[in-house]
Length: 88
Image (cartoon, rainbow, N blue to C red; front, side):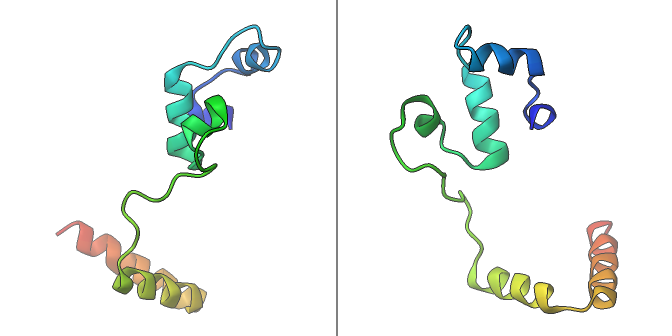
């Protein structure tokens, strides 16, 4: 987790010992990387997890469901096609 939010283990230890408080960028990094609501972390208010800012459309959700049901071979072909399309 530490590398994912750019904080040293020593800094986290200081926060756990209540010698330091997390800075706003730490709260934002945790919210962004893990979806945990910064306000909930700070003072216990609001929902624990933030909702997606851009939830998938119905078609995107159907695509994701289809992707989960695909064989590994078909997933590999699909990802290869997507990479080719991104280069266009």
